[in-house]
Image (tube, rainbow, N blue to C red; front, side, top):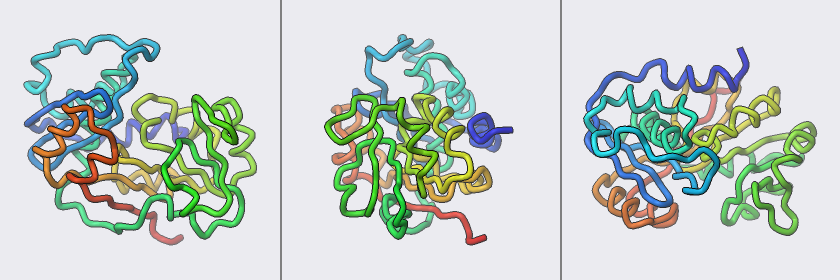
Length: 240
């Protein structure tokens, strides 16, 4: 089974039917809270293809965590984002320990080109030789259509966690087989089992102040604002 097809199955496999404490869907981020932690996922643009209102709005928090996590299989980007936030609520527990290393530093020692999907602020401080791929590329960046060719000669590939929620990760992983891969961003599931699928580094956020995070999300705060409520953790695969 390919990494793309098995990734969501692996993430969903251990999730239980736990109670949900809170769901907040903001313009920039979506938050799901359960008794052990909070999960974040980047909210899609309202005009994104196939975006529709979420079925059962107003009653969502009455469902269990497993049911909400299963929405990752939906064709509606609003629902897949909610599903990803629920998955992250399961894995990114408040008491999870790990390195505080910036996720972009996971491949800082690589000399060969690193292809980066997503425009990370200050990336030049962390990587020596990189190419940025974006849906709406700026000068010096590459469009998504160029990813396959860039991945082929990359020494490392860093993928923004937002691709997990919007399902573009499926194609990216298929084109990255055999490469060193890292997933970076607040919406990264800190699930060690993903190392077995060939993902070397996972860098995501742990929400330590759920009330503050929920307020920031509701008030359209971005990733920079969420830093007030979170700490960042990087998990690396054990050396082979």
